[in-house]
Image (cartoon, rainbow, N blue to C red; front, side, top):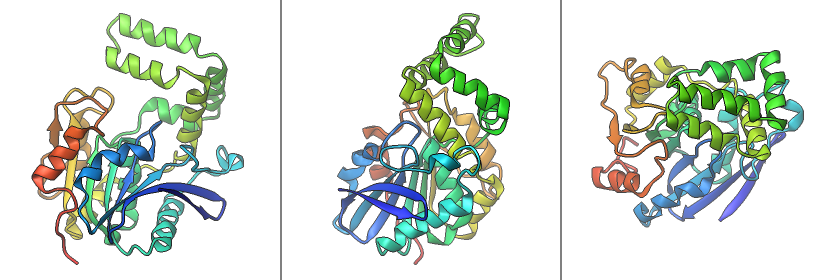
Length: 278
């Protein structure tokens, strides 16, 4: 079932699965949707419920167009938005799962409101490092102007990407990823909007690690063995901040980690909504 929450000038769309009081909040990846988390329905027990959010600029989650360039989302606003959602659903604490871009947003919540989090699953999370292309487009006036030209005419940038792959500077999987993200005008516009809206939402990794340890939050970090978009070695950027570094889980998949194999792994290992301190 889908519903919306209006908080100040922002509309957040979310869907629920199950009816229990024990909740897992799920945040999807860029260009994806809340429906991706239906793969976890098979894991739900009678007392459990999934609340899957559509990130801003996705589905019917709306961020004011007038703010995209001049006043993007802040960390405090993001955590307040989620707090408002939790209050509206009468949720005190929750389990948290984030994939790709949703993993970055989940880490920001772990930084901002760790006392609310019962357990944390990060699936190939974005935000472990800041890509220079992202920084250039989202944080410089010239970068924004240049990307707006790509929205109407992507041919030249795709030719550059194809050339870089041809001379083996770029991996073929990255080439395909770029082509998929830029293949239609609506997708190109989504890249621009989502990047600018969330450009201030990068987690401080030492604080994320400290909060996980201090709050004794059960934690799992999962990567795809064949992922070239967010490779497993990026996990070291977070794990090095733990006093006792946890080991990441590697699954024989690429970047598309919201897959039945993940549900099977979480169910088998007991990481799905594990018991934790009250």
